[in-house]
Picture 1 (cartoon, rainbow, N blue to C red):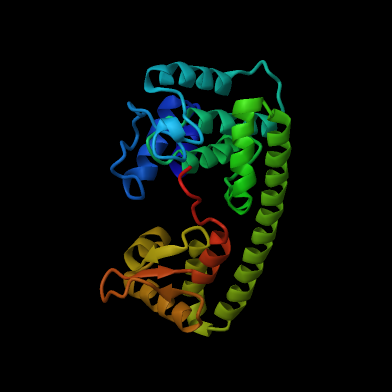
Picture 2: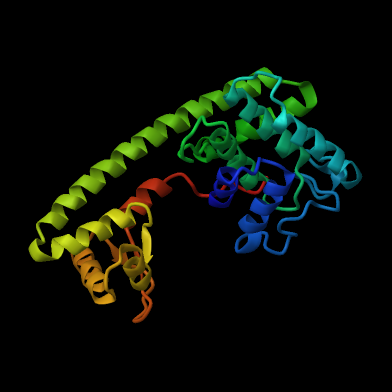
Length: 274
């Protein structure tokens, strides 16, 4: 997501090239790392079943893949349809999942594209809307409606479901933001009670609101503080139970703003790859 946003800010459009770049990063160190990261598939894939003959859904064959992807990219760049941006995002998601252009990671990338598209259109200033929890909670209905679009053209039913999911995700994002702000205020009050250690611990706390995982040298460089000063500040934050040391190392230790991470991570566990 961060790579995609950087490219968008640099003037690069959402395109097949950008999608391949993101896919390469997404699979580089995770599930599917041996399944052609960053490359469109050159073989047939399918969903459910043991072969195309008994599969629940068979995406386009490889020889038709680029034809489908070209149509997909043209729709991404089409400024004439005048569709509401949320409707456009719902259509893009179905089209991408139906093409299923990669051997692995299609589900993850298809959900990421929803948020990326909303950012590219200016609907979101930051990638704060994640529909994955809603789609995971209602995965049976989700798969059913994707298939009904393909077999029956049931676009209205899909869009109603999708828009309900966006509304729920937006409400969840607002609630998460409120919880994190309350946490920041509460922890800041604890730090202010440190006395002489507070002036170095407070900027570190503020830094960890945007970088919740830090190493001592990295934080020292970012804050223009000495390594001993940052190490001492982190020790105070650990003692206050604001930060946890999670690497178990004696050198180059990694610290996490754990309660903050827990709040923003709720519901982001991955769906199956379908």
